[in-house]
Length: 583
Image 1: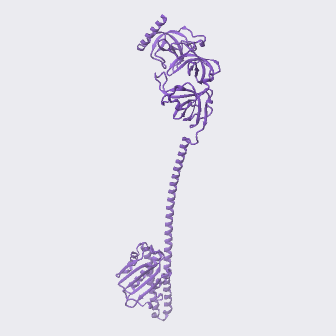
Image 2 (image 1 turned 135 degrees about the horizontal axis):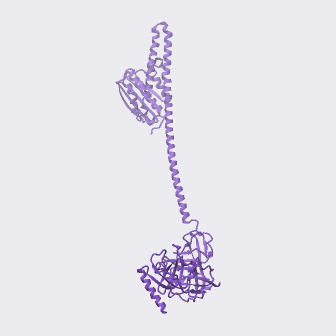
Image 3 (image 1 turned 180 degrees about the vertical axis):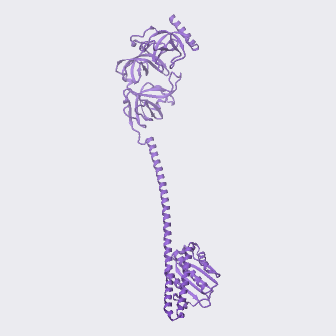
């Protein structure tokens, strides 16, 4: 090593170590310019990476001191930089420290006129203080800003293209690549790369892809699972699997499930954007370069974490859809489930609405039926009242009118001749008054609403019993009567009780009833003076009671029997068919 180089190394080492503790320390550095970039945060500065024998230094160059193209032409030149150490970097810091030049950069040795005159590299870099080196090989994959080269030395060398490089080689093309070798564990990079074509014939080993699956990638050569199989790293492989995520324009990659393993497929194809979409669940065949992916950038950690394998297809033809997914994708299935759930909810809501409407309509119809039944009852009651008035009071009033007319005709012969007709008219008028009172009581009474016939009978005769002792045992259920038959029964019993008290002067009256063989039977017995049934006075004498009873029973298809004699009381038995069966 030259004395000047040793001195430079000592100065550099001293200056860099002192700079960490004392920013602003003046240093003089000599080294190789390996990269020049525009500051991404401050356009008034450029950044240059200077490789010294002992370290890598980032130089912050003010834009006003030199043009960017002139600074770019210093790449691969040996230079001397005098400046001060700085700690207030305006952008990200590459390397160990930052130097701001205090004088123009001195070029000690310009870059070679022909970059491709660089020596041929036969192995990985042993130290980084080197000029550009040349690699001759075949392009096996191309991406924006970089190419992958297969050579006799490297199975797969990743070359990062220089800003000046405009050549975008095709896969299979023979090229010469010159650049700075950099070891970025676990792979080797060629930085600031320039390319030159050397023909178009590719080695045979790079043409034939190797058939693999996900399990093979994660299985060592000895068959041990859980270890990465390095055999396929940097080689062209063909793998089949199912697309886990979909692909459309703008996506940069897809996940491919092969067996139980996941492999990433880089879709930034060099020829064009993939023509068409890849739905989730498609079965694919992908051919391309197999590379390892790492979770951390090599500059961030000395031991980057392995993050699986990435396949780099060489062109759109390397991605083939062997089978589209089934129509029943998870998304469609979820949509159908949601749609069915919505339909079920809608049906439930509709059923609930219909139930509410039907219940409301049912209540309305029930109320209408109640109103109709009440109207029918009113009509029936009016009809019954009209019949009662016609059959009793109307006939009685007609008889009274006839008696009065007869009294007027015979009145010329004297009062004694007319008295008989007037007495009959008086009897008829009393009977008419009694019937009218009974009709008014029926209209005001709620006796017909009673569920027990014994109680209904007692309430009916109570206003007429006076001091007489009346006992009632009516063993006929209310359900055996219709409203009309119940009314007739109560009117007959009342008429018999009134006759027993008024005409027979009875003190004890017994009323009994029973239901048997579809017939309603009841009797009224008293201890009154009795009478001769054969000599009963009829309507002609103003007595309409028994005649009215017979007419009512005739309308029901019933009969009446009278057992009585003078001084022996009376017993009247009534029988008629029930309009309802006994429950």
